[in-house]
Image 1 (cartoon, protein in one colour):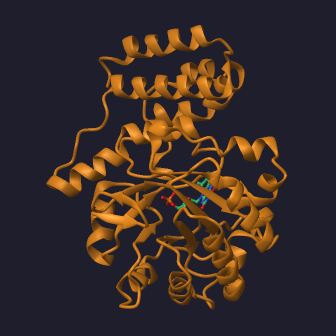
Image 2 (cartoon, rainbow, N blue to C red; image 1 turned 45 degrees about the vertical axis):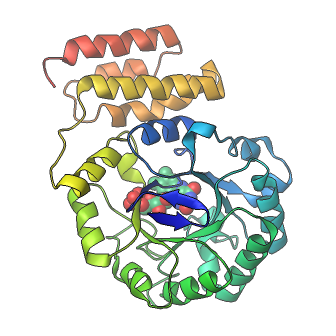
Length: 328
Ligand SMILES: Cc1cc2nc3c(=O)[nH]c(=O)nc-3n(C[C@H](O)[C@H](O)[C@H](O)COP(=O)(O)O)c2cc1C
C-alpha cells in the first residue's frame, strides 16, 4: 500500500495527470472507470480562485465517486497561493497539489509553474505556507530543473519533504525542453533512491504502453506512475498497464463496443456537467482519439464534430457500431 498522508492507494498506483482542458470531471470519470487510482483536476489559477472567478471555481468541481482526487493550484505569489489553497480546501479534496512544472510562457514567464525551479527558497516558502494553512495533504508536481545546467530536483525534493509535503511527482524533462525530446527518468530514480527521501515518488513522462510502464517501474523503483497524454482518448491504458504488471500478459485492445460505451459515457457526463450546448461542443476534441486507427473515418468524424444535436450524435455512434462491427 502507498500512503499520501491519510490517503491509502494500492501498491504501484497509476495516477491520471492534471491536464488543462482535458482532466475535467467527464474525462476523469472514464479514466476512473478504467482503473486510474487517483485523479487530479486541471491546474487552477490561484489569482482566479481568490477572486472567485467563475472559470476557476468551476475547476474545483469534484465528485464523491472520483475520490481520491486532488486539486492542483498554480501561481507566483505566496499570499495568493496560501489564500487559494484555503478556498480550494472548502470543496474537500483529498489532497492539494502544487504545480511547479508548467513550462508554458503565460505561466512560467509570470513567475509560476516551472519558474519556481529557478528560485528554490521561494518554492520552499510557498509550499511551507500552504502546508501550514490547510489540513489536507499537500503534494508537488515538478520537473527535473529549469534547464540542463540547473537540474535541482533532488535538492528541491529534500527541502520540500522537510517542510511537510506528502508526495512528489516528477516529470522527466526540464522547463527548457517543454515537451520535446525524450523524458529522462535518471534523476527521478535518484530522488526515489535517495536514502533521505521517504515520501512516495511518482514518475511521469512518456509512459504510453504496459511495457514502458514495467520498464520504468523496474529500472527506477518509483512508487507509481502518472499518465497524461497516453490516456487522452484511451482510458484503457490504465487497465492495460495494471493487467500487465500483475500478470505479464497484454490485454487485447478495447472492443468497438467498449470504445463506443466510453465515448457515450464521456459525452453524457460532459452534458451533465456543462449543459447540452457546451458539453457537446467540448466533447468534439475527443472523438478523433476515441476512434483513432479506424479506416475511412474522416467523413463520420466531420459529422460528429459539426452537429449540435445530441440525438444525432447518439444515432451516429449507433451507426458506427453497426458499420464498423465487422472491421474491428
Ligand atoms: C494538454 C495538456 C495539458 C496539461 N496541463 C497540465 C496541468 O494543468 N498541470 C500540470 O501539472 N501538468 C499539465 N500537463 C503536463 C502533464 O501533466 C504531464 O506532466 C505531461 O504531459 C507528461 O506526461 P505524459 O508524457 O504522460 O503526457 C499538461 C499536459 C498536456 C499534454
